[in-house]
Image 1: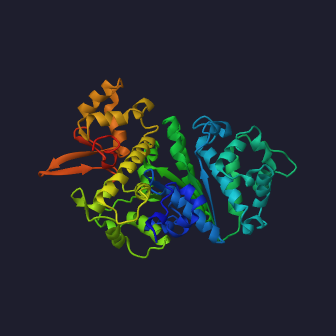
Image 2: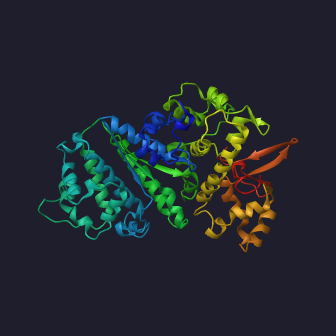
Image 3: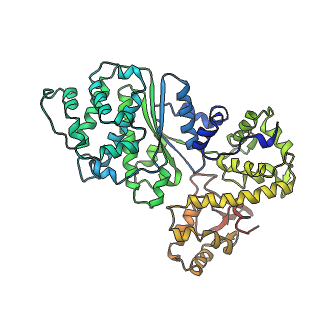
Length: 478
């Protein structure tokens, strides 16, 4: 057994699924029994910070579907989704019948129907829905491999009229040889829902997982309203499936900062009733029993180690680092996320040594990790602040120091010829993405607030800001 043989190569679950599927199959950490929770009909909104394992869950579901005969799952990456095509497909909210909620429902239904083609129990059911299956197949929708392809097809002119005959046959309103023009997505959605009601009872599950919504931030917040409509559409579609006793479901993966941009007055209700939060912070102060260190333990076991992470830690690390427990010191350099821990251990492997590691070894690894960490957090700011501010954040924090006031931050913005009138807004973004926290004194003891430790933590411009430990070396603050 060698430490250097433990697989810490990938921090992207999509890369793992392709290049190291054994990590998904055998080393996946089922935090809070999420692989059971996600099968509850009312749970379809999965959210957490960047690097918390949302895509890993999608990969796990895909892996499970490949082993189970009655479970079908596809993952759609919406990184390149063209939101402008929603207008061409049927209109923007309040502009055309149904608005973009109806358009989203149409896209979701068609995409789920394309999953049905893999299930012979459905395609050979002999129900009146087979007419719609045939039409979807004729016009290429059953072969669609992502919702991106579906929206490109549905945005073409004349799409709805092509389905006139199948609509007529399913609804039974007119004779087959009579033509009925369909001018909007609402009637097609209604027909699809009617077709679903005609399907026989079947035991199989069909899940569509939507990932990659982080990327809408590249264009700022301009598409946030479309996401509100997507959440509404997913809820309506999933409720229809449940109402019909159909085990199909659409699951949406959201980064915390993106979900906060969704202009939905019922968002808190949706998160409480339909959401699953990925929170890895150890609130009980028992790190060796935490899900986070289980990420390291599982990978070690896959490489041939048999001891617990508590025992391995004692063999690998000194008891203390910089007058702290070594486990606390290392965890405090992360956001308590799997991606950060994997990156930290990858930096340890890059030393080319086998444990036990010396204090100097660990500090060398942390220096490399800090460079990665600052880039990772910089990526997290895309769309949340102006690009000129994002590109200047490292320099500004290096100048104001590890602890600073809001006034000092405003002065630094001004010295960089940046608009200081939005200083508090920028600080809020830095707090949300874990660049900074708050520190204050209470009962003669320091108190801290970090977003990665408590999701409901709120930045206070009246309190001192403190830079994250993992950034200090890269910003020349240590």
